[in-house]
Structures are given as C-alpha cells and as structure tokens.
Image (cartoon, rainbow, N blue to C red; front, top):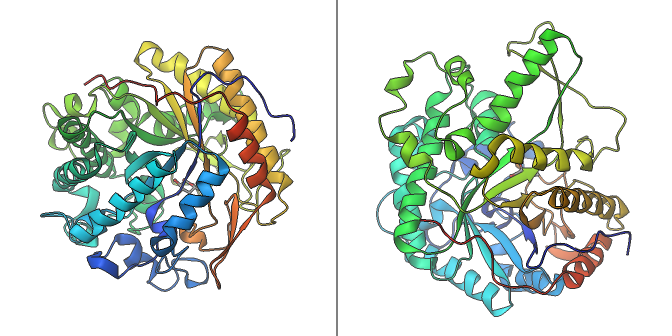
Length: 452
Ligand code: FCB
C-alpha cells in the first residue's frame, strides 16, 4: 500500500459518496415524479452525447449488490441522496409510499452491513413541478423543502446517522442559475439573491423539521475552493477577495455567523429586505452539528480579463497533475482550506466532514486515483494535527456515474461501471481504499452530538 497516513483520530470514518440522480436510474418507476434533471438532460444539446440519468448505474435495482461493495470496502459510512421526486412526485403533499419504501430498504440494508447511513436531502434533483412555480427563485420552495425534510425525517430519522440538507448550493447556483449548464438551465445574470436565500432558508427549515422528528446530527455540504490571487496587484487581490466571499462564504457565513457577507448587495437588483425577511437569518443560523466540505481544487483568480462580465476571471492552474476533467490535483490546498475555515469561523465552526473529494480518471489500474486519495487524506491528517476537528472522509465516488453535463465520460468511481452491461469492476483504488478503511482506528458511534 502506498504511504497512507496512519493515526487518524479514534472514530474517524472512511466512507463513499453518491447522489440519487447520478446512480439510481428507474426514472419512471414506483411513482417517481419528474425532476429538473430529467427535463434538462432530455433537452437536446445539454449533456455530453445526450446522456440522461434514465438508467444511470441502475442502482435502483442493484442496490443490494452495490451495498455489498461498500461492505467489502470496509467503509463505515455511505453518503447517498434521496430523490425528492420519489418522495413527493410534485414537490408537495403526502409521501409516496413506494418512494419511502425504497429508501427504507436501502437504509436497513446499510445497517445490516455495518454501514452508517449519511443521507443528503437535496442533491440538485428538484421536482419539476416546483421549478414550474419558480424553483429556488420562489420562497415557497423553501417551505416545501422543510415539509419534505419532515416526511423523510419521520420515515428514516431513527436510522439515518447524519443528515445533509443541501449539496453544494453554490455550485447549484452558479452552474444551474448563472451559467445555465446544469439544470434548471437558467442564466439569471446578477439577480441571484432569491436563489441563494431560498436555498439557505430551505436548509434552515429542514433543520427545524429534522430536529422535530430525529435526534441525529445535521450538516450541509458546501463546495469550497482555496483562492489563489494571480498577483499582488490591488486589482487581482480585490477580485480574489470577491471570489472568496462568493464561493467560500456566501453559503457559510449565514449558517455559521447569521449574516451575509457584504458582496450580497452586488448579487441583487431588488431591495434585499424584500427577499431576506425578518427572522430568516435566525432560521438559517440554527446550530448545526457538522460542516460538510466538498473539495476538488483551488481557484486561481485575477481581475476580470477583457470580455469578462463578472468582477473576476478564473484562470487555469498549471504545474500540477490534472484529472481527466482537467482539474488540477493540489492536496495541500485541502489542508489550507481546513485551517482557513478554522481561522475564519473559530468557535462557530462545528466538526468537519469531508463529504466529497475525488478525481475523474478512467483506467481500472488507477494509481492516479490512489495517489489522489492518499495525498488528500494526508492533507486532512495534517489539518487535524494543526487543530482542525475533522470526523470523516467520503470519497467521491463509489461508482462511475452520470456526471451531470459531462454525461458518462468522466469517471470518478472506485468501481468501474460498464454502462452497456452494468457490470461493476473494482479498480486498483478499491483495494487500496479497503486497506485504508480496514486499517483505520476501531469505530465508535458517529461523533457530533446534536445541539438542538
Ligand atoms: C460535485 C458534485 C457531485 C459530483 C462531483 C464530481 O460538485 O456534488 O455530484 O458531480 O462534483
């Protein structure tokens, strides 16, 4: 085994992550409603090769053998997501019994295999019926999300070990509502505050709902990226600072500090008070028990280059290995990020879970992926040594899957999937990660007691 960093804290959990739309398939089964990703991916020209999640990894039918893989891996946590349109096909009203039953079996299947269920409530597959009413731009969607959280919490709250309300609201905002390259395919210019605020309000209402019906700890997962200014110039520094506030703080300050960073004024043309109502920030900033960190790469930022509409430009980072996606591999930036979160939020920072990290790399003999995870685990270990409380690391992903607009071409799995036959093949990284999981310290219960 390559030089894996030993001595993680007692109880540190090694896991794997997936998301419903990326793996489940069975898009029309058991009363599942349409999601914005069905609509988007079925629209010509939106995804590579016209790929959709209609079948994906067919996990909806193969979940038992997929859970067997996780058990074989020795992972103690599995972060999966629940498809809102399976629970409420139109995003409203009572739970669809068949949808609940699927996740009920899945969660029991995890427990039977000694795997802690880590359930994400929203990994981007909004019911299309809610999008038709304005999606996250509509305040009512936040209310609906709170109700959905309560339905799921009532059904699974006795067994889910850690809740994740939202996955990467920042990426959902930017790719789905600014660039329009993810569902729902909107380009809202700089009129973004409704989509920002209603996602956060939805998070807060989901926390309230889950506290009523479940005693398990709660987190949300953000995508963070340490920012490297291109130069010392005032312009590059200012652009980098703006970018840092947008990506790293816009969805975290309101939750941990109860206030928006000042850049929020640049993200709306409407009066802020007409969107952020009295009491909202109190709901949003209720204590959470952990912070989910999804990390892939740092960002090199300069002042806007010619032709750029935004107040910054993102530049390519050179001089590092790159994944099939072209993303630079910079493990040390994960340590910097974790230490920075501790510096910025101090005592307000709850324990951290790395809820995603991984790389797109196709070969089955994937030393590249082994090096990726070894490097990032070493970075986590260094952050722990520097005093950051990190409780778990979930590799993205268990399986190759539907990588959103990139379709099936970008492969992140510890397990290779042949999408013609659905055959699963363990990559070299699978055996390596099994060593990591099984040589880790003995596992006590999840840490991070609920504070609510
Ligand atoms: C993250 C997403 C996840 C996956 C990885 C590669 O931004 O949360 O679904 O697509 O990127």
